[in-house]
Amino acid sequence: MTAGKNPRNFKKKGQSGNKKKAKHPFVNKEWYSVRAPSIFEVRVPTLTPCNKQQGLKIPSESLKGRIFEITHADLNQ
Image (cartoon, helix red, strand yellow):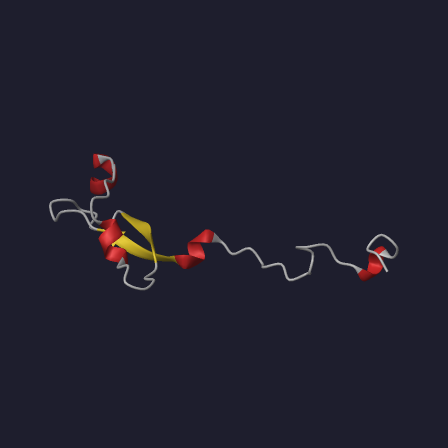
């Protein structure tokens, strides 16, 4: 019997029905608090996401060198 005779017996590739449910991208993140110097009233003005540890990758290494722009008014209320 060829594939064209009875299409219900033959499945096309990629249509097996085992589709993964889409996850939100922030599920795989760890959140770190950004700290400001002590001269400001607000010590923790914001949080920043970072990928969770996988194998030998350390998440705190990817945080080094990040630059944040925060207004002076947000730090002093």
